[in-house]
Figure 1 (tube, one colour):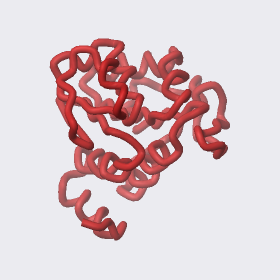
Figure 2: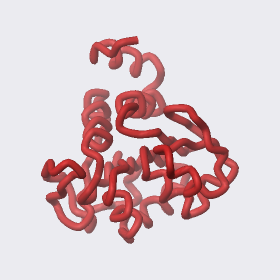
Figure 3: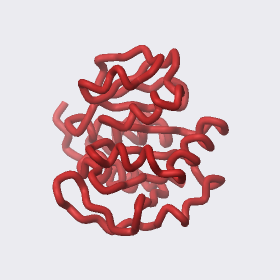
Figure 4: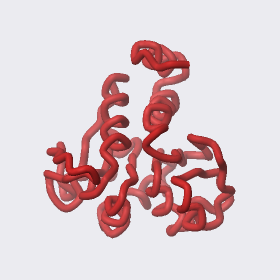
Length: 180
């Protein structure tokens, strides 16, 4: 199961692009509302989620996705359920994907220490111990980080590649009519 955590103030394109692309790849994805089953993105778009925080089953997690946006990232970081999911993934070798400002959550927990990571410009100092990269998407161990909204599709396709392979990601990319 892939959980995409959405909190009030999340960046809509980052969160929903990941959901859309992962579902197109026929992966099991559930959106999780932090603070309620209806959340409002940073641009005023309301989204009904599949699950509430209380319905998350850590033992089912294959991957978690943390979209950025403000104040969404701050709400994610304050969530005990999100923190528990991150801890479970880190302890059990499960994928943790974060984009834009959200990699700061991982940096604050010390999970990026010695790892290559990227984030939205201005959040680099929050990636405690990371080897900060200018790349749009970084994969280091079971951690995937992305710079921001403009690379949401690349980020989502990388997640497909990691879970389903390069061929499936390339086929999906071609079907999406991505310019290349």
